[in-house]
Length: 478
Image: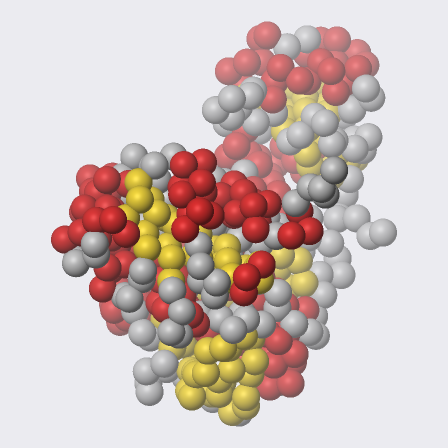
């Protein structure tokens, strides 16, 4: 298996603007690691100081296991046995701040790698768009993509550090909670293509307003090279505002006629969506293995990247049609009594919840629709109003029953009542109380949507419902 380009100690010191305080400058390492449990014998350890763990406390253990080097904080240097390390040939590089040093190592490695980089951010759809984009690019190119939710100042650099000589493209996801984060991540990954999926009311606690979200996402455009290309949502007014001041060439995607990459004749069905994909160079029919208008938007962004990468219509079609939904993102479970459970529990903000509700309404047709909703987190001072608004949306969308849990469950319930939903159709309680109430009231052919922010762990409700209703999961009779 090919490894990433090796590192010399002097290179690591140069890349991090650090000092080599022990060991030989030409000592070589094959990788960069931050986890003492999975570090390999030829890796150098970067001691990250996190909220719950400080990597410096694990250095003695990894060196006793044969690791030959560590990147440490200058502030903690006096507490470390540097003289012993020098005598033993252990490399020690002191830096101002180890998380920043990890980013600098990733930026250095990105510059020496041969791959082009796509960076994806946005209020909704980052992970799905990243997976779709990787699938499109992988139809022709050797592609590296972010795994899981590694989209912050630690996770994103770790992805880039996995770039190997054979990689032609890398797709990274940029997350944020506060202003300045996207700028720092963009400076590290130096994208050739920057994608903003959309801009909506997410992370308001950290940025204050929807305009704050726009400006935070716009840091991608401010920092990336003027020679890079921006892929922006033509249907989103805040993205359009960014496009108007964008100094990079842009490709717009959406359903509006002025979008260069757009969807026409959308036909949403159970577990799939068909539409005409219009590119500047071709038009063809596409079938996604997932429903949802917002999934179409994600696919359009990925198709725009494929077009910019020079892929053919056949490549783009093959990549998008190979996409499988992310776990917890509009996953469908067909249960006993013709019940359909939609697991969209991965995360939630106001825009994504409204999109999921619209998908439920479109698919359930004449059958009953049920929403099981948890809190949308990180909304700050706007939280009460936005939860009330979602409750009102539920009431106005021909949803038959609403089950809510969390600190803002009462606000959502109040919004539903204000929107005209009968009080006896709204149930507020703990997750276990909701499940008990729900399974006792279900009727054949009901459709159930479960959604909430990551911190709410709404997937536990999904698991409980399946355990209650799926015959294969029930214990055998004695």
